[in-house]
Length: 468
Image (cartoon, rainbow, N blue to C red):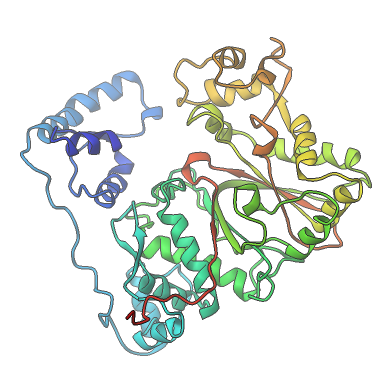
């Protein structure tokens, strides 16, 4: 798509060849990037489920005609649907049951009951914030719709968020608008979904649960803010099955994960232990929100041991168990892009700190233990994937300077190699029951939703202040 857009911007005709199941997504992405009606040539069926002969027949009989038509047409065709309602338009009225049925029928809800976003409710939500409702925070790369304060508030009302959550929602919207995060990939076929992490000294006062049952539905702030993201992706970014969401298996909406700031501050008095946002470059003391897209997770239950040396091998095994297809991101989809997350309970974090282990010490130890056989790693990035041209062995990739030397310490196919390229690629968060020794490992989706952190600004905006 990006190659076609580059060509079209240079006034060179182009056609993007896409699989049959992704034609709608491709059209929506082109619209979001400013090229509505970009010519597409569709290939019939799934490329990995056909013989060469079948694929060739489909290509000649169908795709070639699409290519010729696309290259010979004089201009882009306006394929946009301009029937969607305006921001202040009253789309329906009636009982709350009727309104919910109306929203559900049009795909504007997540399947659960919503609070009707009446103009008065949205205005009350924004009252006192100082924000201009029509200020544009960014543009959805997947749909071309503006990210406005008003649209943020509309979906916040629907999700049941409170006005004090608005600064967090704005920071999350800034992440969606950031090209580094790549929101346009949110509907890819593996079904990875965003994990939202908040941390900072105001986390608890804003109502977020950092303790027992972290990430379970039931705490209002964690649940409603997590739900807001799913609604905003659906209603503004266009992530529905009809448009952008091509997930084979989707994850349920995730409540927000809130870091235990009190524990981080306590162990930080004796060892260096930055929060997730600090690990990603923000300053200590900032309230921050971080997002990345996760494919799957593994519970690492009942972590046994009273010393770091006893605990680390078990945690490393859990991290290794999360790494499978995700390893294609290490090389197949770009070098050094697999960055899993390990969430440890405060009890485990305090055990490390009591032994004088800071975050970097723990990361280095896990780097030594979160390993799998080289032959298995090579199958994930080669034999079992069509994303790595040439399918080179790890030793060859290391010789080319693409992977570090640790991947080529011998030619034994059973040698153990790390699941990440360097220790700091293992992110570690602290949350959960402070009296339990459990952990959870998430595998991230690499460039399809890269780790991105933004500062949360709680100060009232001055958008509506008269300037003399």
